[in-house]
Amino acid sequence: MSHALYPGTFDPVHRGHLDVVERASRIFDRVTVAVLENPSKNPVFSAQERVDFLQEALSELQNVSVMRFDGLTVECAKNQGASVILRGLRAVLDFDYEVQTAMMNRHLEPSVETFFLLTKSRYAYISSSLVKQLAKFDAPLDDFVPPSVAKALKRLSSPKA
Image: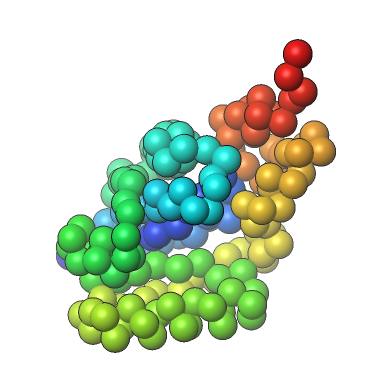
């Protein structure tokens, strides 16, 4: 049984992330989306909120689960019984970083492979950072994030009375 772990901060989750998970769910028997609890990144949403957004957006995919984790991704993969770490790639810039990480993970745990999946071209320019910037300036978000995320971002960016 093939099991892939898709780790990330997902702050916030966007349609590019969801595309990678949906397509991976057709390749692997199981996909676990692992939300990194990394407070040093100063996330906009708590780890639990990010898990909730992902669970809602991915609820129709029967072989996909969502969890929180802290620590090394390769250790999370081992603990979950995943033989693959899934990474989405948008551009060459992503590739350089991801290859370094994959090589380190292979050094730490040779039994866990890294699987790169290119995002669809319509999502190649989307990033969580850009989505947060758009929200800050009250730009439309529906093309980039699920409705619940758009609503939460608008709530956060609206001026306090």
